[in-house]
Each structure stands twice: as structure tokens, then as C-alpha cells.
Image (cartoon, rainbow, N blue to C red; front, top):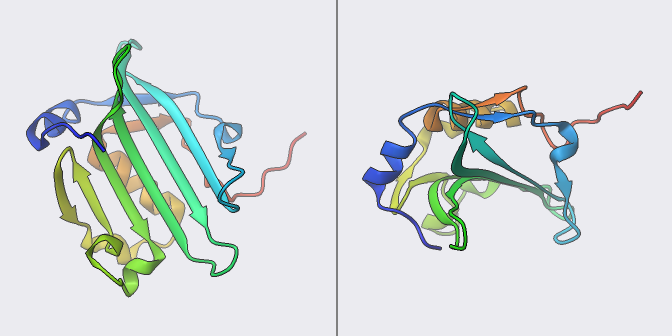
Length: 154
């Protein structure tokens, strides 16, 4: 995956961005793998102009094991060019007892990679989203809901 350098990533995310009008129905159920959801939306700046950044989330709960993987990413996307990773947070239930270093909870600022030790205190999707939002300075208006949350329609 192409990534920008770490300092450029931190600079891009040092100012607030907004994900406006995120609707629970924006979560897409993926056909493969079973149990996976994705969310993707462009971000705007404080004036409501497109920022060239895209938030993309993947949530997966294995139907066989119940293990969860959450990957929350920010990409820079310019016309006619491939996406480039700016930030990514990856948390796996397997992080409690990792088979290898990549199963550990971690985040990427561009090409930089660091562990996220505080993840063990998180109890819900909301906790993960709060950390992501604080770290990236992205505000979801309204707040993005847990993809597994049961929603009744009127």
C-alpha cells in the first residue's frame, strides 16, 4: 500500500476535518467475507470544501470464531491518481494474543507504524471511533454508529 511520509501525514491531520451526514445506512454489508461491513466517505474542511481526504472503515466479525477486526483509514485521493494512505488504525481481537507483530493493535501515520497500547481498555466500537477521531481530528456529524447496531426503521 502506498503511504505518504509520516511528517506529511501528521501535518495533514493537524487541522480539523469533518465527515458530514454519515448515515447508519452508509455502512455497506460486504458479500465477502461474510460478517464484514464497510463505510467510505469524503471529508470536508471547516468551510465545507472537499479536502481530498477519504475516510474508509472496515469492520469484520468472523462468523466461525467471533473474532473482530476493525480497520479505520484515511486516504488522500486526487483526481486520476491512486489513493495514498495518510492514517490507519487496525485493531484485532487477536491482538490480545498475537501470532505475529502485525496482529498487534497498531496505527500508521503515513509510513510510520506504532503500537496502540491503550486499546485494551476499549469496550465498544464507540471507544475505537473516539480514539480515531481524536487522533485524526475528524469529527463525524452526526456520530457514526456501530455497524452491528440493530436499527429499526419507521
